[in-house]
Image (cartoon, rainbow, N blue to C red; front, side):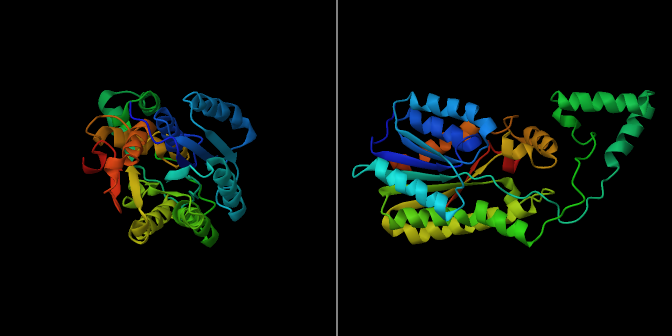
Length: 312
């Protein structure tokens, strides 16, 4: 089994679930020490702490912080502690920014289409059953995994009382777009990066496809991809590579809060060449590969990890 240098550390910002946690598990299995930053409520900590304890069974060093990763105070606390823990022999091989903290309000009220209802009415008439009975059957089948019925079920429900404002955009773009730069700049100034370090972040298909309620996050992803390219150019002379991973649609807690997520998942599973959604482990495997010496010449790229979903 491939083992990383014992002095290597991965800093995962947003590592208590989804892509961040899967990456922590994968890297720890190959000997990477971990600094995991997350922001979770007390009620979720029993599950999270159990996951962290299991990671420690790999024999690597693991330090965790439950704090506001978007604040200067939080970032300073993490890097002060990490610097002390690494000592003279440790350094940061990889930074993964996996923060999922964005506003999902609409731009304007949603005027739902009756296309699904009209289609159900025609089918009900054709097979001589009541529309209510057909509606029940269709929705139950969809809930049980019949993805092909996503065009027949009711449209997602949206909040038509609150809409995106200036502050919503500002906070979302900072959290999921530009915050990574603040982390990288501070790490660079402290000289904590390894000679051949990797900076990675996560985007989605929402960078080019418009999902209702995703406008602020989509804007943040555009910022994220832009600053990642800039870091790839400006940090390359210092041995630091910067890339963005575009994961396919993945059934994570972050996806489930997006209005219409069940429809998004169904559509993605149907068009994916492999007939399934992307998993956090799929993405973690690619991040592991990008941490290897052989991936040193990958810089400034947007890497799709979706099984071909985007082209189907």
